[in-house]
Image (cartoon, rainbow, N blue to C red; front, side, top):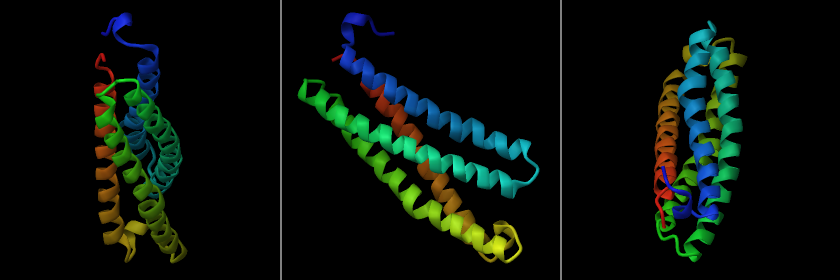
Length: 160
């Protein structure tokens, strides 16, 4: 672990928020969501709950990521050069979150609602193939985000 004199308070603040963001996303994506599908018998309900959790998480992620992006700009101005790369990683994460939140999730929700209105779960409807493909894309994007946030945290933990 880093000694106190090696890590200024401004860098520690960044580490706290980036660690919370990484830990929160990893917990929700790799522990909470699989648990929902394991515990609940109705996979349609589990999927709807997971979708709502991911929607709320994405807004939390956007707010914290924007704060970290602004804060990393401040740290670069203070001479913390490792935050130059971090800014790009955060920007990529923000773009991925925006795509997932405002493009992919609404489409998947719409397909689910149309299927339910027609009397079948989405995976038993004509939307099943598209829904499955977009679910895979969304899962891959989320996994990339979690890895990038880990990289952000790791890079930020280096002394000046």
